[in-house]
Length: 173
Length: 339
Image (tube, rainbow over all chains, first blue to last red; front, side):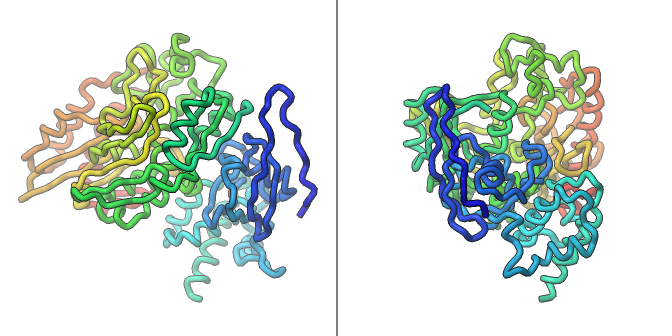
């Protein structure tokens, strides 16, 4: 992780100033100095150096920026970093454990669940949230509850296959 | 997005105080609509007052009269999946889950859902006139591409629709909105919360300056036996309704004791019609009876160039949804086809 966070000065036209925000990102405490209008997405990418989380539409329409906040999947583009003081944020960089890929990461590779890969970090974080929620049983329910993540390459069928695989696997554990 | 100052309120009282003291302050909770609007420069604020760290008003609480209080700062997802909501107000649960996406429902709050702005294309296009965005500039939707616009309660100033699904169920259930503001606390019946455009289409609702929604109260009768929510849209998931219908029926000896029907996607607010609901009283439920109620509800509807289809669509949606309410198990939650 890049620990040299840029010190962004206050805009010259105003008196608004950056302020410290403490987050736990992928298990590590991180203090960022951010201006109030910096989205959580920009804070992760530009301040914390974690560029795994992608900026697609920046308007909550595509799901590429999905991260887990205190275990729940959210859109990092539609929230401000300052609002997440004290929260535990998990990005795609944090889902592998002890050098071992997350089962969903393995399943995405196995099912060829991406082409360009731009939506993949959001898809995987979203799917982790979905499995944790435990509300989707059938394939149709998984599809419905993954509708916030768009794949413009058209890998959706394989993405749902990958998620169903992991879901059925954890059900048998 | 403009530059702004940020305060984190610890209590509703502190937030109200900040909104009075600070110049041009806006409240923020889930942020899913406000931040989007600010990124498009359609709204701005000098100060944002963050309500998310306020400890109160997050719970789903039983009320002494048998009703339920939904904390305004609870998320839409936690509300929809709450056992008391699923069990006693399944209509509300279904409506919430028909809206937005899992991520947005995890962020959006109950209070914020009521305060979201229209998704009228012309409201979002700062280069064209819009009376809701810039009062007095005109309505571009009336002579424009108006497929998604309203058919009931419109006028020459605005034909935008209010986009919430949750609020269609809240209207059907006769919810009450609790607010606190600089002048104190008050409760607003759901029917009086949102407005028709009138001469001030820039006002979506009757909240006063500085007021915060603290909770939404549901009456004891949740129509949990016979209910249905039907959402018809151009895409099967993550799309706003062309027409949606919330129905609750109370049946006794094969007759309708009371009926609630609310429509979404057709007006500047969730649409109820007392005459149609009264017509259904004491009737035996059937397709022709529901069709007649639908005719009453849509009697005053006016179609524009591209949305006149919504009038017949709404009538058929009402009939189909009322029939589904007779057998709620025929519904499939979310986007799946039902019946």
